[in-house]
Length: 349
Ligand code: NAP
Image (cartoon, rainbow, N blue to C red; front, side, top):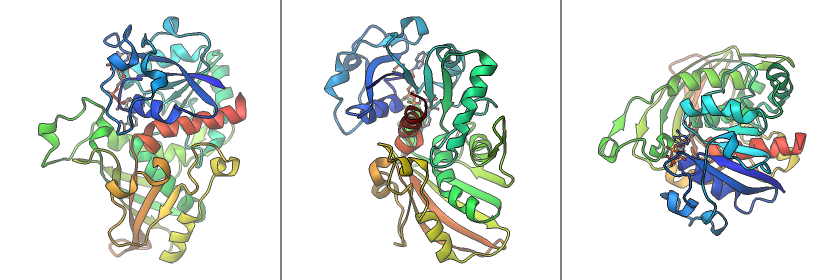
């Protein structure tokens, strides 16, 4: 067993980490850290638990520590981070001197020597770890997973990108409230409403997707060469991001073939049989009223992205459009880091 800790353990994503790591065959939670508001309390006392499944007994009595390397127990090998971005920027590099940090925060994602990884999409980016350790003299390292909306989008674009030539992608999101964290959006702002702005979200989707689909030459990553425009919106859904996606190819391709390409897609996690890997990362539905967040966010334990309404787009040449739903705190956050850690465990530990 590999001992693991969670930074930001009391938050929305932190709780998902606990749920996904409880009874994990390879990882055992031995340390939990959060802010000074929580440090010194038991996890049960420090946390406003929001998941449907009850808090696992195994974590209730763990005393939450301060988020500093000095307060971290030495027996931990992997730290899962779900810290706020500003704080992550400061402490993740400190932890990486001695620990493996699998981070959800955006702070380090676009740093050139930091792997931004979706195991089905660009597992080769883990080879950047060697470059990072050499550049920085760290014993540990930082690996990041993308933003929640980017993960779902990129999983569906990867098979398309490999099979055809993409010219342009437009995406319009309808994002769940849990994506903003426990105290993120006041109920008075979101009930009976749509908020047409999520800070930095569009920039993250537009840059991270191109890094993920980019070309890694063993030293650096060159961005994928198509343009992407995102418009991001918050809607009154608890969990599960919905996205309307419009793709322009360089030539017309049959819609049935595009659907097959997406549903046949598998990657390294499926080949290796990693514990959290979904059987099919992309599930294509034929019903005209799917996907829907309430019905589809839980697909394959929240680790698969569901696509529907794949159809021709008549406004642009050689184009098609579809709708997707992905679970933002599972496949889009904690589950993504756990899958990254399973791949790291397989390759490096
Ligand atoms: P959250 O519910 O607000 O939780 C934040 C966590 O960080 C809590 O455990 C909190 O501890 C801790 N924290 C806050 N300030 C701290 C400080 N100064 N020092 C140490 N710990 C501190 O937020 P979240 O939704 O879980 O998001 C966490 C991170 O994941 C963010 O970077 C977010 O952008 C990223 N992310 C979130 C999602 C999502 O769908 N929610 C998806 C992808 C990525 P206390 O309880 O003690 O305050």
